[in-house]
Length: 215
Image (cartoon, rainbow, N blue to C red; front, side, top):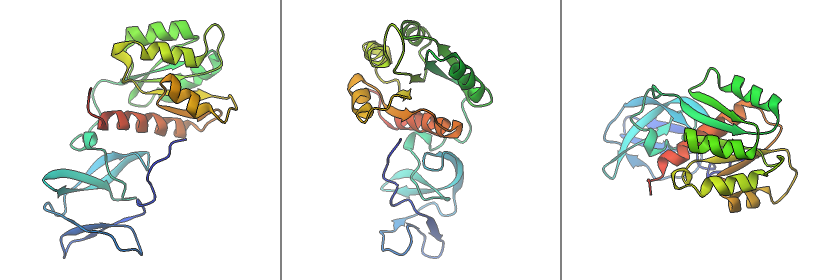
């Protein structure tokens, strides 16, 4: 489950006469001066989980954008990117469930992502080092090596320290998030899950990575 500061994202309105952009309904909010009036573009909105019409505006000399559907801010890395990259981003799924690996491959078939799979921890680590995926989906309960140890070994590779790792497991453990974060995971979600929710989680994790400066 991904939690964010969505409480203030409820709706956006544009006041063309005042030259301002205001967000929220029924409560006072600080209006932002808009230098570029009427400039709209289409960006990926992490809140809506899809491409949405967005309003571009200048604030303190920086170009920013907000989703016109929900008012959520667009991550800075996405501003100016109006079309998907020509190269499909690789997403590696490490899971001993062959059925799930097949469903995962089918799910990403018609998306901007290329599906890679590994049936166990050791082969998953090898695939991660070889393929350098943009993101890794990782099961916890696997033979030979559990997902937490796989996560720790992947994080030990300097080239993979910044790769988002999402733990996806059916394990009922109230401390799943804590254990996952301690091992180096970025996010955690429970099985079973809706396919669209998984896609949204992948896109959000990649958007968060893109919004952070490289170390």
